[in-house]
Length: 426
Image 1 (tube, helix red, strand yellow):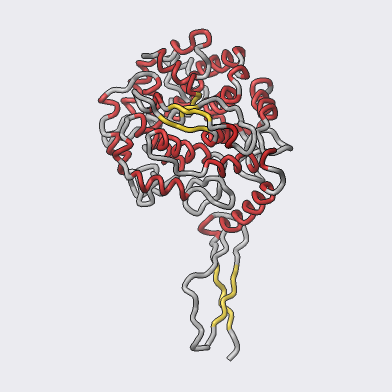
Image 2 (tube, rainbow, N blue to C red):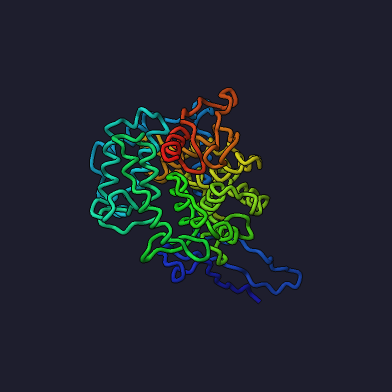
């Protein structure tokens, strides 16, 4: 009897909503009694195809130059970041209208991290004026902040706005223009009975991202109270998944790099890292790094992405500062950022080879790079506020240090700026 063919479709365009063609593999049906059909078959999916291409691109870049020549192109980055202050942004960025504070945070923080003098007084002044312009039509002109003019106050927008003001060095007394009472009242209104925080009063969701933004802002502004933090630890502990990472909520959500950072940084602010399964968390962080590409991904079976150099890298740095040891290969991560996340043709830093740079990936790659060139510890006092980094011995690096200023991985801010802001409101 001749062999018969059977079609097996591994991607359903109807389910995925994608236009990519369906891959069809032919599986022979045999009558041979000695033939054993394998239980596991090699599936070709969009992710496997993309990873194959990413791996090829990364290996090509790793082999393109000597390790000692892999350095950060600082001047190219400066030109890219200054562009945002000196000219109008292209119309393609219109969809980010509700993310205006984030744009300011990514750009100003990147400049400050590269060289504090690059964020000039004129830039700081423009930054502060823009942020307060977002809320000038509200009853309170000092916060909480939305994503754009006339938009509802949002947890993420307020986080980005406050963090942007931190790096402004209190230019023109801008720190004292923040309405701490209004922000605290708003945070308490967002507080949920289960210990979480909504991101927005009218339509916001509740997840670990909202918790982190609330605690980070409250910590910076010295607004932490028993009422604000009640039930938060219990909420966060429930968000740790069987994998070891954290999901957005406690309803069997998938562990994700961004949500894991938010949960771990929140627990660091509350000084309650000992409440979670640390062994599983460190194992999960280690599993996010691929030996071949050398970078970090955000979820199981996903592609590497430069932004997770911070989301997962900063999680690892927090654990290192807390005395749990190092759970990622910093040397490999540094190589991924320097080889694969910058290009000689386009300024700025990117997700991975084949992608275009943007302000988001520029900042988080820079902070991830700072993590790879630093050691973290906490000498004494409040854990989150006093996380300290020291540069690794330059002789141990295969190429020149990147010269990024020391940063606090809990807050995503330069250490010096964060401490100045803490002291101002204490």
